[in-house]
Length: 403
View 1 (tube, rainbow, N blue to C red):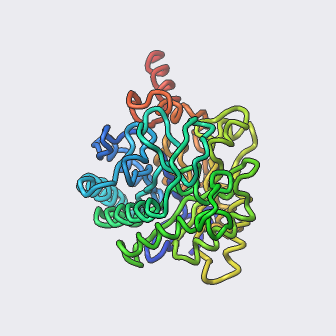
View 2: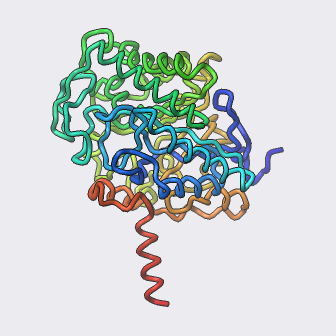
View 3: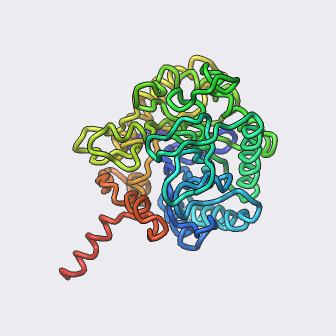
């Protein structure tokens, strides 16, 4: 039965063969709480236990790097050897236990990825790899263009990482294929300047992703949910635009992805927007700038395109600028989008889904999109205390002084 106030938001839907108890997703973010070698810490586990008990239907972890030359920030998760499985198992197990404790049966996907040429000061300091040798305007480095053998090797690495995630007890994985990561560096015309089988046409630029998916299916099987976060637009001249994103989404869906999360921006585009936001896919001052649900048009176009063919009609997740329950309810009820994802609001309020499920009333998320949470790990690197709502910390200190 559908509650008129709650709409479809707290009804289940499947990703592959896994049932997700409601339509609210915690979108992946770098947590900056792994240790310096990428292993799980108790501090990190506590973050995910809070999310599990907070009522979200699906949590997607911060990205776990599939090979050490893909690390671009301090304290990123690793999954490039079997030694990581034990810690990752503790994370997945503690999440499931916490979720069951509150009767939610929430699911958790491990996000996996490689950063390619998109490298920060705190990341890998050796040779970088990418689709092409074009200099990155952001990091001002030139990567080695990957050979066919390099591509097959990284595809196998993704496959092994997917299998490790399955062994560790995660309910599925998500490839990080948005925001300028290595997968984006192949499918984006702004970043891919190859003239071989992996460059040029839309189909050729999609081939790298399909090689990864094929290797992962071989390792993890056909029933293990594999999803991807992808751009609906790079939001830069010469980059991916929504008409081509629709074609890519169709190729990806037909090839066996179980869900696509639609985002936007590459880092080069972020320099063109004022105020500058770090990271650019997380714009500051959402309310003041009228950017609520700023990726909705991209997600709607892609979903409408996929619905034309039963073989491509997979669930779509919208992410970006969501903070009001009424907006999310309208999108889920009326726009054909299966899931809505948030990150920054759940950093401040991991229990926001539970608060909304008890409504009405449905209070807006307390998050004001100031980006202090992300600025700290970008600036401080290994000195960061972990991603958290720094604004709330300041408010709590001020209140304590006044008491």
